[in-house]
Length: 337
Image (cartoon, rainbow, N blue to C red):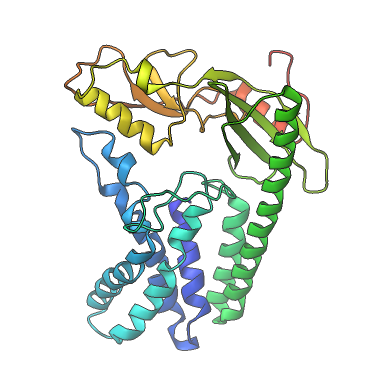
């Protein structure tokens, strides 16, 4: 999830277990600890653009890293405070702050290496968006009140509300899954693989993307909290088969990079319909029914012995913004779509 929410969750869990006299210490320590796993964003190389993709949400988000990350944070804070607080106490709050960080990221759609090094499988429960202001505020408001009143009752309440929100998201996800299943049956599409994921900042509008007979189909599905389901049929894109459609010589650096990008994208690859120089991860797009990948690699005019560059497609003009709002509210779209 976004870095700020990670910190807020860490502060909430630490504050929920803090004594009255340690509220500030616990909140600050938990906030820093909650953000610590995202230090993996610093693992990058100007000569290898894909490196950051491979290590994003990797070993620093694993369960085994929890005590190590807490040790790193507690040592830092203990030194900054000039040993004025007991190290054991600081470590306890850091441990509380970091313990849920990887699990929070696993609730989103990108995938998290929770079980590394036992397994490289990236776990993605597809229940929350990367940025969800409702979820964040459910934690933040009680956290601030609890800090002012020096009572962990509020942070515990916030954690409870956040847990309820996740359960509601689970129900919404299943409802969207059922609607998508009906849609696939109506189209008589045999499904080889599928993903249902929430769209930006909400658990009402979902993206359904699935593979059928070598094609990727994307649709938007709105499931209202009190009913009112609506499907916005989307676009189709051929699924790229690297075994037969790799544009680079076998064993070349560019070919290896394309296979690396395919792995981090869980093989959901397609050529951008309007930018043939871009091969992207079709699971992610600015609009949920779109087949235009949000990010990918540049393949045109590339020397085979060079690394591939990462490019993004974040075009979100006023017309697209209005379409997103209309779908979120269950309205019909303009005839252009």
